[in-house]
Amino acid sequence: PRRYRIHHLRDMKNRGEKWAMLTAYDQYTAEIFDQAGIPVLLVGDSAANNVFGYESTLRVTVDELIPLSRAVAGAVERALVVADLPFGSYQASPEQAFHTAVRFMKEAGVHAVKLEGGRNMVPAVEKLTQSGIPVMAHIGFTPQSEHTIGGYRVQGRGDQAAGLIDDAVALAEAGAFSVVLEMVPGDVSAEITKRIPIPTIGIGAGRDTDAQVLVWQDMAGMRAGQMPRFVKQYADLRGILTNAATAFAADVTGGTFPGDEHTF
Ligand code: KIV
Ligand code: NA
Image (cartoon, rainbow, N blue to C red; front, side, top):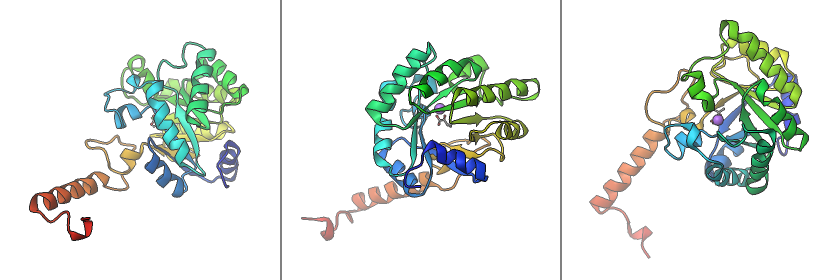
């Protein structure tokens, strides 16, 4: 398609075509991923850790995410751009969710928003979709609820599976156009993917979801330290940039940069 729309994602599910989603937080990554053919880019509240250097996702604000979202939405030609609604900006009421989502649509030009939560978010999902705002839902491990969940833990195991499936069905019925499943056992995400007509997007949710998402800095090896088990690293950008910075500094200290060709 010339531009990815929510119906294209549903068509891909119906045809059994899998697709990839990546986070993006700035112009160049958005442009690169868009040109690579990634259908959906997410301006995640993971910007907290991956852009702003906060230790928790809970700290990022609407005012911080809107300029990043504007950069991403402005840089793409084909990708559908989704912005995360940050912690505290939508849970109070469907009206609060509506006002926050409208800011992202008007001030940043995103095409959809994402929010975390299950059946409790049905009224908000209905309000937004009925107002013309596509909603991506997010269940399983939901980082904004880290402190009630009690840490980064797989969700939907054993007795919890039925509740998670009910959440997915309720969100789809409420009008969500897709749902992220984070850290969910593979058999449970397979069951959800079969049961609902909208695409499921997995992260640590096995291979049977309709799509997969990763944080781009994890995917491309930009971040240091231990990666979660669900990450596969496709490049070593950290190594590449370290080498570039080291070589630049060596040229400067050694007097080989700038050369004649760089000099006016
Ligand atoms: O904020 C984020 O990056 C996310 C994805 C991992 C789904 O919510
Ligand atoms: Na997020």
